[in-house]
Amino acid sequence: MKPVRPVTAGPVVGFDLDMTLLDARRGVTATYAALAAETGVTIDGEAAAARLGPPLEEEISRWFPPERVPDMAARYRELYAVHALPVSLPMPGAVDVVAQVRHHGGRVVVVTAKSGPLAQASLAHIGIEADAVEGWRFAETKAEAMRAHGVTIYVGDHVGDVVGAHAAGALAVAVPTGPCSADELGAAGADVVLPDLAAFGGWLSSHLLPGRLDDLAARLAELGSVLVAFSGGADSAFLLAAAVRALGADRVAAATAVSASLPAAELAAATDFAARLGVRHLTPSTNEMGREGYRANGPDRCYFCKAELTETLRPLADSLGLAHVVTGTNADDAVAGFRPGIRAAAQRGARTPLRDAGLIKAQVREASRRWGLSTWDKPAAACLASRIAYGIEVSPVRLARVERAEAVLRAALATAELGVRNLRVRDLDDVALVEVDADRVDALSARPDLLAVVEGFDRVEIDPRGFRSGSMNELLPAAVVRASGDDGDRQ
Image (cartoon, rainbow, N blue to C red):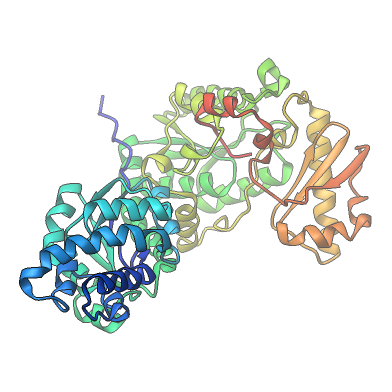
């Protein structure tokens, strides 16, 4: 048996600190003012703050003779902790870029000319946690630290950061948010110059996408042949298209499970999509209702649903001579709250190529767009059972009531020219709780006549918070969520 290819590791991204992640200019000016007051030496603190990047000793040497530089640098650092740390701020977008790296399963390494202790304290003050912090490094001296931590992308605002990245063999991504202009950074050889950190998340996702698509293709090729659990949603549609590309249509089949929990419109769309790919499309019936755990609709309902699905598809795959059952679980699903369905599918041998290749939801949509797939911007469409509040028994009657309510309300909204992208009718027993896109909540609240089309409930209400994928899980105790740690399709 071939060894299973390990899950793709995320990127290791290095960051400079001052004027890349940290805005310490106000504090630097105050610290030099304090040092000037102590020593009687005139120091232009604002000019010094505008030159942040190189080692502190280089700046101190502008104001003191060589023999005094070590002592003055040490005193500056003592004063910095008092005058600068409390007023330091994150650069715009700094917290988000760190989150973006984590989103891709990556690690964050800060390599800076600032002293190690002050760098650690500064990051803690602005609420950024790095996996590693290396201080006392500038230009070429940053390279050793980057290589030691496996940094492949380094983000900085100074030409010295570009030099350090290239010395380490890392991709130099520059932002002109410090003392160096975009032209200077480009002339220094920056591989990428972004306007600011706000552009980094989109760039990173796009940069990683080709490699992850290659990885996905290699994983699918290794599987040999697959039966795709095809709901018709964006993820499973993309996986189906990728499988056909990697294996050829004759070694791929799509299976859309038919039951009371699948909206009829979704089945029709799935059938059309598979036909356009030229792939076999099967529609086996599943009997989730036959499973007591599913009907009971506890927090682990998805476990029983996915168990039924995979236990139905595995024999079907065998009968077709297909080696593996694969699902459209993506890398975001692996960390997205309460997801017991992932565990059920994994226990029954289903494979998750998108997740294993590190593809997040945004990358699935972007790759789908590039490939011209009609599902690239399709809204999330979880099964109908996900609309029924936990603890209320799932039944064909309730599923049909929810499907009918959503269909008539969507049609009424379209007629009233209040079309929505996302719409859910949550079944809270006697109450229908309607979720629509947040920017449509006020407009719908002003139109009770539209809500009146929803029948079969004693009362119809609008959730003022708007549509939220997985909102039913908000009602679960935290202990239940922690106990699961994984899941299937987002609800």
